Image (cartoon, rainbow, N blue to C red; front, side, top):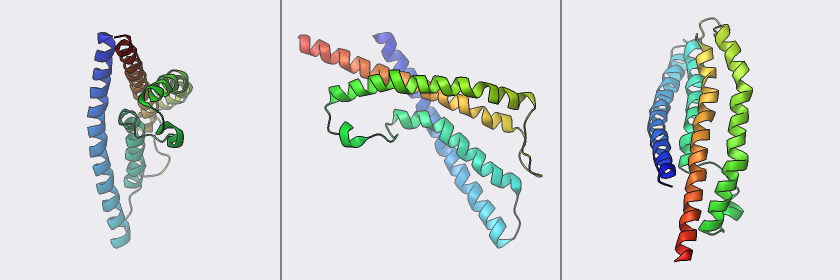
Amino acid sequence: MNLLRKYVAVIDYLNDKIGILVGWLTTLLVLNVFYDTIMRYAFKKGHIALQELEWHIFSVIFLIGAAYTLKQDGHVRVDIIYTRLGERAKAWINLFGSIFLLIPFCLIVIYATWGFISNSWAVREMSPDPGGLPARYVLKSMIPLGFFLVLLQGIAEGVKALVFLVDQKKQEGR
């Protein structure tokens, strides 16, 4: 059980640090959008690279930040039922949801995107627009990376639920 608790601590720490990074990326995104908007509307000077950078940064925020959001229990769920349940029932839902929904879905996405990413790297894909950003393959690599981080955090959330249930069982046995 201590090994499981250590795993949870390491993954939670990793995704906390990633959450901080994503926070700074959000600040960078706001500054980029602000600058791009001022340049386009005040000075009539737009840059394709800046516009692409906006959605590149947003994509990284969304993909890499998903695991941190999961750790913070910030994802949408059907709270009509879940919030009315006791802690033990919530733990069972989290455990089974992690094992039978979240983890398999992450594995499927990682597997399904592998060829797509490999092809992008093989041709060193870049923006088709003149003045666009190079190295689009790096951005596409964020898809399996993001889902891998969600997978790790999903396992950690399942372990948290399992540890809670085991601890509850031990307390009942006393």
